[in-house]
Image 1 (cartoon, rainbow, N blue to C red):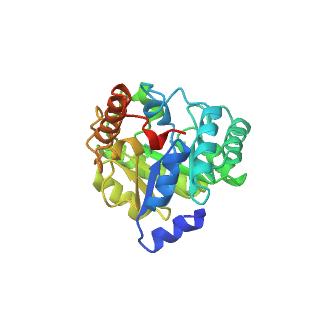
Image 2 (cartoon, rainbow, N blue to C red):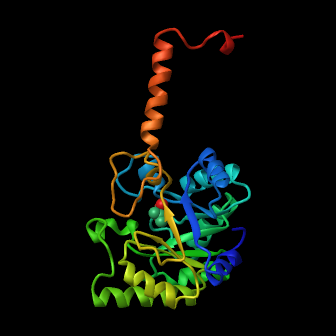
Image 3 (cartoon, helix red, strand yellow):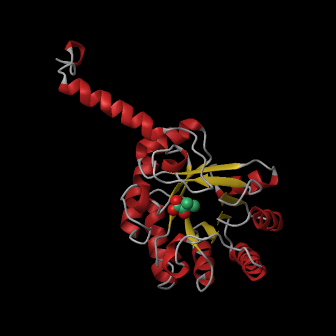
Length: 262
Ligand code: KIV
């Protein structure tokens, strides 16, 4: 993906969109080599990189720093950066300044959680030349209101709310939306009804694309087993084995050897 138009084309042509998070240059480079379509610099960085229990501690400055690093590693890829907690709740000017910082750091678009109470801000960002990816369903920034990370849209009222939010997001000019932790049947309906692509996480296979957290699908986070994550590698075991070999080699005096010395 190079531009927002490629997202629209992928939906039209029924090509699945592959998105992974990244927070640094080297993993971004590997994602380019692996052929993903788009990188999300998610505020999940707070949890997977900074060891926090939720995403609320992310700031625009921190997201910009991660975005700069990812851009250096993936100069050719479409990069979306998360608008951190509360950054769209302080008015249009504040949101535009925050989003501008993320675009100047190297993102081509920002992702905004939810629509309720800030749809006008989303429209303002788009009108200001800032592409917006929506994020519907489970909103991790609302963890304290939700009391955790429950699946959304299970009942009739919840389903209707999410369908409505999708339509509003599209009308406000968003170019795509994440759908997080919603029943796959609902995700299928929303995906069918919207012209913009849906990028699912815990939303079943009928979304137009999928996103996962880099550390999750590579098994780098061994204690974390949500139902929607598939581990495509045992990254933790690999890193642990390599680090143990390094430790043993240093302790036994076998590293560095003559070839590694000047
Ligand atoms: O912050 C993040 O990584 C996200 C994805 C899980 C969609 O928002």
